[in-house]
Amino acid sequence: MKKFFFIPLCLLLLFTNCNHKYEYSQMKSISNTWSKKDTLNFNFKIENTSVKKNINFVVRNNEDYQFSNLYLFIKLKQGKKVISTDTLNYKLADKTGKWLGSGVGSIKEIYFQYKRNFLFSKTGDYTLSIVQGMRKDTLKGIIDFGVNIE
Image (tube, rainbow, N blue to C red; front, top):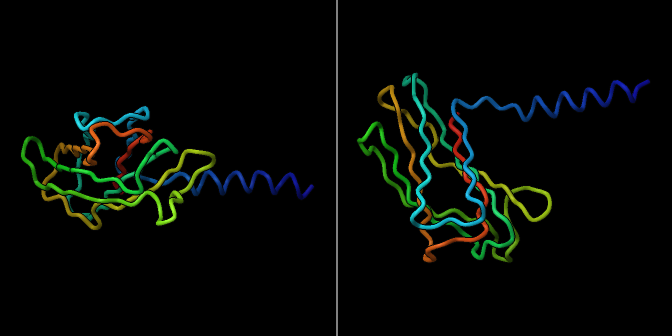
C-alpha cells in the first residue's frame, strides 16, 4: 500500500520542481550545425520595468562539438535601438575534456547566466540576437540554444 502513495508523490515532486515559471523561455533548434551567418533572434515583450530580471542561456551540445568553450556575440535591442552588446566566452568542458552540465548519453545541457538583476528601462518589444563567435565558420555539435528570462 505504501508503494502506491510513494510513486504519485515522487511524480508530483518531479513535475513541481521542473515547472519553473519563466517570464519568457524559448529554445531554438540548431540541428547540429551553427554557421557564423546564422543569427539566433529571440523576441520578447517586457511589461513590468520595476522588477529586476535574470537572463540565462541554455546550450545543448553533443560529442561532435570540438571545443571546450563557446564564444558568443550578443546584441540586446529595444525595437531597433541597440541597448547592449557583449562578447562572452562560456566553458562547456573542464580541463580534462569532460562535458559540464547535465544529461544522459551524448547530449549535455548547460545553463549560463547572461545578465543578473537586469532592469529593463522601458516596456515594449525586445530582441536578443546571438551569433556564434568561434574561429570556425561552421560549428558542429551544438544542437539547441535557448533563452530564459525570470
